[in-house]
Image (tube, rainbow over all chains, first blue to last red; front, side, top):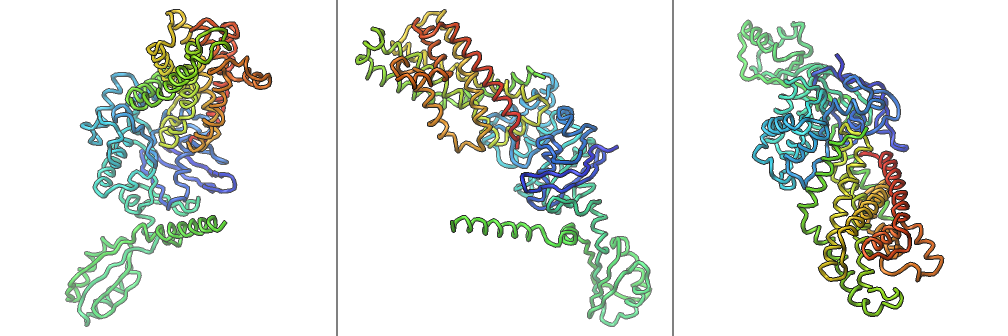
Length: 329
Length: 253
């Protein structure tokens, strides 16, 4: 069953169009990622789906409710962890959760239990009575994720959940996200980290300049690029081995340069045993073997023609130009 | 439509923050205290004739209570902008409660803190020996404080919807709130002002608030107290409706 249906959503801010007619569906229990650089329209999409912004045109349903017409029902079904912190830093962690629970109409016992449970889950139980101002960035993020889960939403939006966090905290937050998926929560996650999208998401939509340019599982996206590259170190004279490899149907291309043989194929990890069989038949010694899988970064590059870093650098240049023009005046 | 639990928890949040920020409470009492002491002591003996023999210090107390009310209430309406700036507004806006509930929650919290503020100023005045207040006049004063705070929180919400951040705050305080305060007759009787200026005073909601407080505390007022109450109820209703309307229309993000 579809948990989220987005049909041709466009959002304009004055003359600027942030999102151009995007469409996608998310299955119940799926972990769906929107991958793209800053300013691609990810947060705008999340804001529309979480009822904070009205779409200029198009329709979207979350948990069966229209985001523009049945806002209260949508709000009851979702939890949101915003990109920018949305905690009251003058309250304690526990009080922030209590506030949330009461806004969502949870009963007294239910919310006491739930606060304990979610604080335990993000390992903040011992910090429950500390004012949020004294939390570190990672602790605040974890508290927000805990808060997003308080009222057991059917759909959880995570907008750049690990932005600006250190490697350990990122791994921990990934673990929480995987736990949530196991409980059966439908999750939409935005990110501009390739590894995050790759390791967490069931399916990824690559979004660029307000348009979804590719949408599939990370595996399929990567396979679209013509498969994996396998490099072998063999002896320089092993031409028979290379000729035998060329005869195999699953081998797309083979190149030999001195003692290094490079071949491309789909699902490279399953072909390595085959390669050894051929090597045994031709009495060839393989000194080393290396499998290179295309990364999502390659996929991103393929579909947008630029790496995320280049795009952001380009944006920074534009900003500098605008600033210097202002200074001239 | 209106969710009482949500109003309660929004009120509770304001209370917790208010009680925790002790330096802020003291800070907001300093200006009223300075006005009371310097105007009361400095001008107290000079003025008398113009007030028909009434002690200027007693005349001043309701004015300064009104002053602390208009400042704290307008500020608590505008402080929606703080919540926007620190992101907490999104947490409130994405919750399944109506916009009316959110506005009522803010009014409940803001007016409670403003009234506490007003009462503290009154206590200071009593301690200074500037005023003596009976139980009945205290209760009537509270009624006026409630009406003043609701009017100006609504007004603050309207102002907030026209601002993107707190940068325009000083501008608004100097150009709108201070004139409203001076025009209200808080420091001197508006009868002494030139006719055209007095006419402006009549459309200043605080005029009726200060007049009501003065009637309640020292038994002297320009208008009958019931008229003051009626006019303020009108103002507060209009301001709350306008404030809610504009709050509803402004973007959450």
